[in-house]
Image (spheres, rainbow, N blue to C red):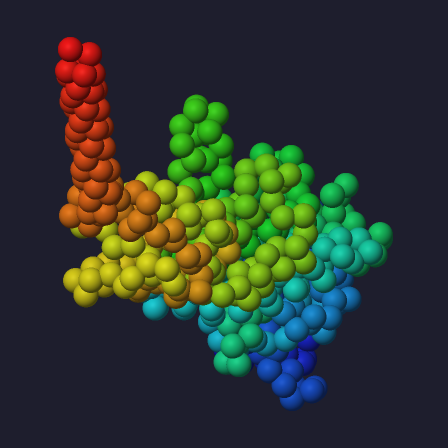
Length: 410
């Protein structure tokens, strides 16, 4: 531990200790030559492999330029150890801020931070020799007073600014943080860009839920034993997290790297899409029609409004509409407080009882057929009577004719 006022290399004056770990410490110091504040990173390791890894970190960072990365201005070794001089970043790391806050950060704020870090990871992963950070976690993300997030501590990074700076076949040392490391890193199977995506997703999960995610090794053991994955989706832990954001996190935290986004740029685009879509997108036509095919018992629920259906009774307006979770993209975690506008719901068919052809004719409303049949029967009766009278008259005249003829013959 360096005391306050210690002068290193006759140039850097120690102000205070910023942080301390198993491999060394970081101090705030004053660069007397340039009259500016710097961060002085010291390592006390003596093992050759770790010593070379620290030098490798210095060479790697010295060639990088990105707003979310610290710049290295010097590297040296003296009797006090090996030192790395970097930009001094005021502020606290996100893990400390989360503990002080005691509750999850707002979703929009976390997505803003993730956009900055994913842009930095895209920059690192697309270098001529890709650089893998391999230790992304809330403690290694520092928030500046201007709201910018800086990615710190490349001590476990794999990659190189030039072929000569490799110290092992992988250009890295073995190590990880259990809660944030992917399965391939824990098992020592090799890491790649998608390993950083897993670690970042686990970090965002922590910031959005104030809960550490289940580690990859425990999750893998559960899956192998045919047990449910213990990783609970973020939106189930914190309802303020949109399901679409939770879906991206679950994808990036897939146990197998093949199930994760293909690149940092791809994951960044996925998050941007969750922010650009409307808060409550209208449901598809088939999704709206299906619930209306089955008619519930009278008075059970209120039907959605449409142009061809009269408004529901006032008492039914208190019912709300909750769209089914399909996993598509939306922005607002809140459930819509009322029935969606009529423009989003297709017109419903008129009720069957209102169709006129279905109503049977009533006797009181159609008297004309009976009067017609009555007149026809009356006419037939008169015809029969007339025929009878005519026949009787003809017979009488015939008999009278016979009597007259008989009288004349006598």
